[in-house]
Length: 403
Image 1 (cartoon, rainbow, N blue to C red):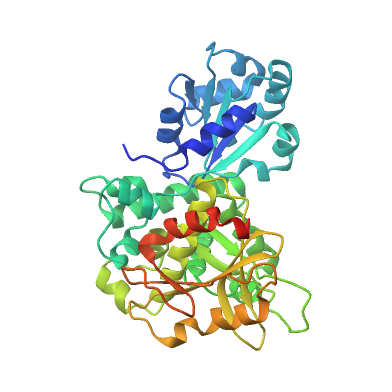
Image 2: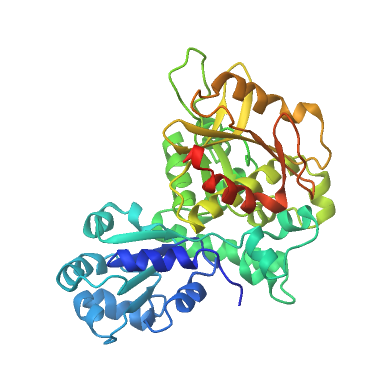
C-alpha cells in the first residue's frame, strides 16, 4: 500500500469537524485512504444499488442504521444529496468530531443545497492522484520525466501489467457516463467527449470561451463555461487565474487551463508513447501542467491556505506561477521543460522581482522549476528539479519571513 502524504491532514480535520468530506477524481485512491485513516469506522458505498435505494428512500434511518461507536464512512456520498439535510440534524444533536466521513468524486460542496446544510460542520479535504514525493517514497517513481508525464499519477497505473491505453479509455468512458451525466442530465455524451479533447488541446493556454465554444459544435460560450465547471468540480482540470493588483499596466484577464493529471491529458491527445510525447508540440505545456498539478497536490496534502496565480501583462512578459502565501506575500515561479539551463530562463522571474520586491522581505527569491534532475544554485533565481517540487514547498512553508 502506498503511503499518502495527506493522511495526517485528513486525521487532523476529523479531530476538528463533525463531518469530514474527502473529495477528488475517480480512482485517486480515496476509498483506500479513508479505510487506512479510519480503520474502525463502518464503511458503506452508495454505488451499491441496494444501499443507494435505501439511502434515498429513508435518509434519516440510513444514517442511524449502522451502529458503530467509532463512526461511519459513506463512499460516493454525492449520489444521494437527500442525505445531507438529515445529516445536519444528526450532527447538530450529537456533536461528535469526525464521526461521519464522506467521500465523493465530485466536490459536493459546490452544490448550494448541500453546502448550506453542512456550513460550519464539514471540513473538506481534497485528494489528487499520486505525487512525485509519494512515488519516490514507494520506490515507484519513473526515472524519466517524460515517462511520468505520460503515465500520470493514478495509483492503479502503478500496478503490475496495467495497460495505459485500455485503462484511460475505460476511465474516460466511466467518467463521462457517471459523473458527467449526473452533473448535466441532458448532456450529449459524444459532444462532451469532444469538448474534453478540445480542453486537452488547450492545456497550458489562456482560455477563450468563444473559441472553445465555436470548436465544440458552435455551442453557446456560457455552455462551454458550464461544462468546464463540471471538469473543475470533478478534479479533471483547474483554471489558474491571473493575479491582479492596482497597477497602471494592462494585465491579462483570462485564466489558464491545466489538467490535474497529465496521463489523462496525454490519453485525450492520443499521445501513446514516450517517443510520441518527446516530439509533440504540447510537450512543454504538458510539463507545465505536470508541475502545476504537483503544486496543487502539495497544497491539498498539507492543507496550505495558499493561492496560486499566474502573472501576465497584456503587452509584456509572463510569470508562470505566483504563490500568494498571505496578503501580498508573493513568490514567483517559472516552469521550463528544458533539461539545459540558459540565461533566458531567468529573465521573467528577475524582472518580476525587480518590479515587485517588497521592502519588508528584501531576501525574497524567485524559482525556476526545470526538466533536469538536479537542483542548481544560481544568482538570478534558485533552480529546482521537477523531482524536488515537494521539497521546495516544504521550504517555502517553513520560511518565516514569508508566512
